[in-house]
Image (cartoon, rainbow, N blue to C red):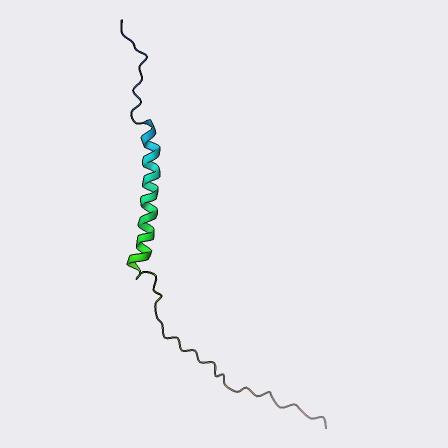
Length: 66
């Protein structure tokens, strides 16, 4: 007589673990892109020259009553 009630559960729990590890790898890849590919944490130096000198505007002449 053979026992047919044996179960071979060899991969059920590994699928969830693989999904979690895959998510961690993706997050680390995104972080590595921003840290290494974009120059690290040093901000870019930009020369910003803003001209706030506006031209002088005069009001129109007020008409006089005659």
